[in-house]
Amino acid sequence: MPIKTATPDHAYQIAQLINLASHNILEIFWQMQASKEQTPLEVAAKLVQSENDEISYKNTRLYLDETLSSNESPILGMVQAYKLPTPYDVSKLYNHPPLIRQLMRLEAKVPGTWYINALATVPAQQRSGVATSLLADTHQKAQEHNCKQISLIVASQNSPAVKLYEKTGFEPRANAPIIAAPNSNLKGDWVLMVKEI
Image 1: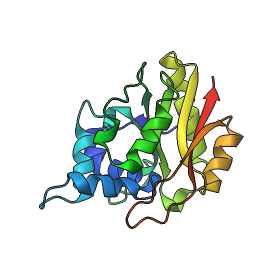
Image 2: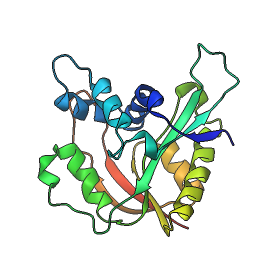
Image 3: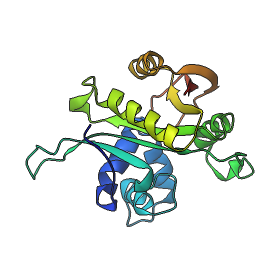
Image 4: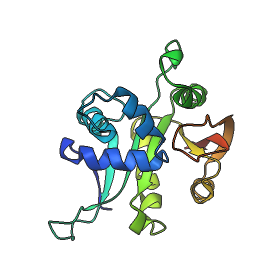
């Protein structure tokens, strides 16, 4: 399986895929942190390059096609996952914008699970098996970290993703309304899904 752990050199492409997975909502969040000289994706790329942030390259696995020419990106998809803390600290919930708070409230319901923060496939490779392979890799990583469950949060209106997760053993556990965000047409609920290992 052509899946490998990312390196800092992949930071910008990872940031783009995280934003794709979030339906462009995280770009709004990163914009709040950006200086006048920075773009939102530059803010995210810096976080990806860090050693300690949750969206660090260390928590990112890439599906690569290394047969492509050197001027093409070999990244076909990525999954970012890590173990949620136990207990999950919600004391700083209100330091974050409302759209992030909803996600944190759901994460707090599944402390200690192997949490899929983002799963994305480049548009040209969607429905080609890349996401399914990344989920299988995630299952293996969860076992290596002695986790009994894998969790994720998906938008209810993203029916292809919901169907994929259900097909691979995830079940809905809780939901929370999506808070409207500027420049986003995402509606409905965030759905917390869990898979037993």
